[in-house]
Image (cartoon, rainbow, N blue to C red; front, side, top):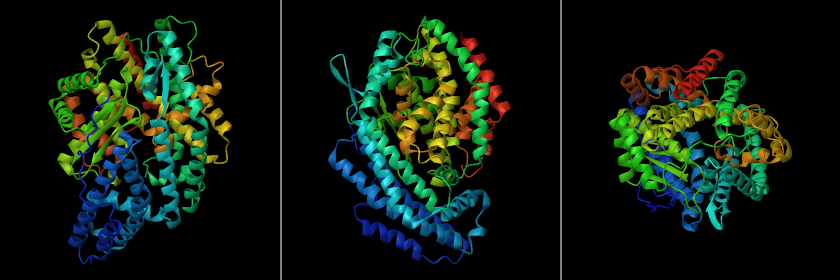
Length: 565
């Protein structure tokens, strides 16, 4: 399953080891006189050029580390970026923001083009505290430690040492005995690393709480809402949690009864909640996975396949599982090259197939933005928008899963699984969001209380139809396997919001495929300086997570499942 690892996929146009040189570039920007609106616009372009060069190198180093957490040289380069370059970047970012916002010409900038940038900069000025820089560096060090632990995690399976993602893939197995064995193996692995995970999370929570206090907030949750410049409130999130619990969980329980019946089990146990009703994994070799996904993308739109084939040819995909590789998956932008890189630690499973399609939604979005507007800037990167196209791509390819499942019944089962995933994306990220609300508004909680709260919330949402008796402790500790809680806090609810939009894309596609794909591409290439609602509108959908929207999309999703059934 391993692939050759190439490190020539990004450009290093700035030497990050030369710290004095990097600092001189920043200092030079600070000393540039701005005497007109045209001077300010040129200064902004020069600043963007420098930041892009730094971010491409840092992104490349980070991906290198995730691809091989056990290489000492790669790790040293990555840690230098986090411990030396990142603090420098934060220090000068604050100074550059101040220079921009204090310019007498800033209010003359075109509102449509620069309004979002100005608001984000003003927000960062309010949030910046010099004393938080070492805390943010320490936070990153703890996240790196998490990646190392998870990257090195292996499990013995039938006499062989297997990477952790392989064991997770066995939870899909149609054989209940195999699923149960995999579940216990996974829990055993979590138990092995639990003390380390608790220690890391305890320290992260205290660090983040102090960061928030330093910035003048009562807790880290409130701080992060301002950091993310969200277009909605904390109360809106709580309302969303309740709407999903009220309208989606009953539908999820009904669907669970269908799966329980098809599995032929009397009780729906934790390892049954993962079964995919599919006889075999969709592929055995990564090359087969890539061949098939290219075909699916091409049948949807030639541009989609063109981008995938380009990435494959230029070694911008690393998909297989291997020891020492960090868990998870993501698509990241290389702003100088105007390329994307998809990293994923995948073992043959239905989830792995969908994960690649998901990340290609991000990649297509990025390439379309590159072609229309150039590299996405940090202030334009909003997860509620990005995830619309990743979830949307999954659902646009729903009718092409026969590429991997040519038998009619298997094809229908695969479609049902993708729709079940759509259900889980409506409530799974929400339960994770609620968990984080609790963690950071109760920063003095114990590890035991954290596990208990995680079990309680899980039982309210995804595990509602599952008989969890005897596994409360095991389920409670399983939060440790979620990368987002460690590395990207409060990046979960966006998945649920965007899934409501993606279901509208599916509805549009069922009514008029050509028009739906045209709208998808139009939205994916939209000007990201607009509001989230305006971007959604360009994609032919509405940014709405009200009770009526949740109820309506839940009913639509149930209907589609029944249509396939």
